[in-house]
Image 1 (spheres, rainbow, N blue to C red):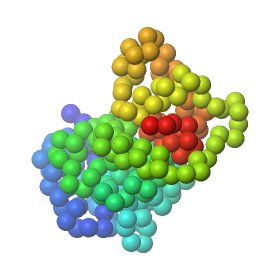
Image 2 (cartoon, rainbow, N blue to C red):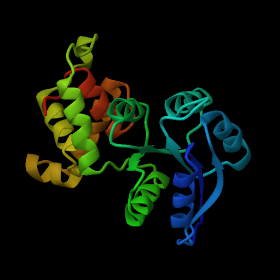
Image 3 (cartoon, one colour):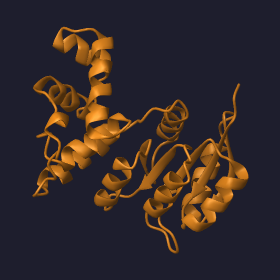
Length: 217
């Protein structure tokens, strides 16, 4: 059985200890380090090479978004799961657009924590229904969407339907059934959507499409 190394980055001691205690109940996950801010985390990431990073957004010295930007600039591909609270929707959406592999409320359950980590390790993005609803609610309330500049990159009606279905949490197999096409065709459309929007994941595609006013949920 593979044991995955976890780095926790949060300025609240209680949060770090709580997550540590939960991780210790599983033989599959091992907390290899903890940091109080992004600056400390960047150093630990180089030293420890964790498999997954649990990252707070609001931290002193260096916050979660700045840390994610620096990791991206360094070409780091270690998956990041954002730790969030109920009043951080705008920051959460920015992290989503930057490729976060999931979002966890700080009082999340053991099962949800493990499910998100397992998904991140596989390179997948896992967004719970309540998180996606918050993303959609915030983006649809905002005005002045950013349009696509290149006409050739505009999504077709079929692509928009697929992306709307993704935003609602439907898997490729379900979307394929609803549209009367193969699952492989749905995945091909998703690849085209990613290329047009300049993203590489479902979560990023939804965030960018909402930001540009392409999706109306």
